[in-house]
Image 1 (cartoon, rainbow, N blue to C red):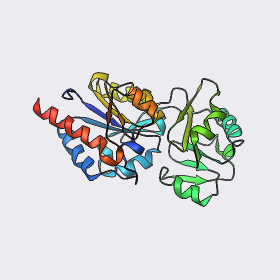
Image 2 (cartoon, rainbow, N blue to C red):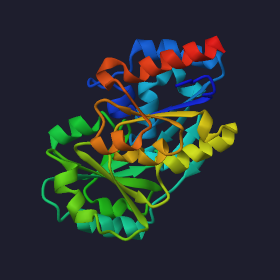
Image 3 (tube, one colour):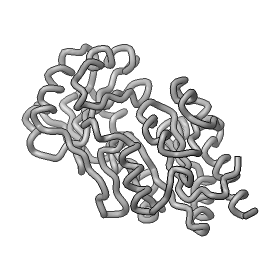
Image 4 (tube, rainbow, N blue to C red):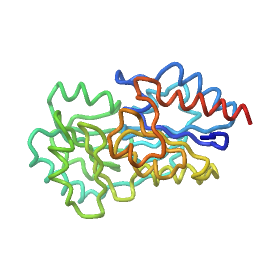
Length: 271
């Protein structure tokens, strides 16, 4: 595996770049400086809210591309490169369906902030890790037409795959349904995925699939893994992702991304 031609590195956040404590390592920030010196671009791609992503990467936020809300939005600094919104009527339809599922918490994910109607203190504490900017409202339906919403995120304390997915798997094809982690499931416009957003970044930079490296761990990473010749699944990834990716690296708690980036820099230096 020769990484000397790589010009763009793209990484998921939770379960990938972030360790189990939700932290970005100091080693990554040191490696990022070296990537920048070699004119290798970096993109953070996550199901998280934009504000949450840049909070984790605050010191480098002006130097990177950000794909937020599973591809609902792509930005470089203050410039919005791509945005896919859900129509208000579709949001109302989805809320009606989701409210029938026992034990779920619903999040409306807007361009600038998220909205929840849950008053559960434990959920709100957990939710704040992923959504820095939010409002608690009495009724999500009443705010459906007040903002541009990029997706609906749904949380179940036990399993999103087991307890949420069966209720939504047969939604019309104009919805994209992604199990984004053990507990979260996301519903967005069919065009809003990390792969489409990554193609926009690649076009902006004039970088090809053959020059792109991607890291991921869950189903919401599938489309962007398919946009890179150097696609890496984490050792802790869902089994489906390991089957799709071209390579496997160490887990997020064992510096899986950083170890590959170290090799990348070594191969670039050798050239």
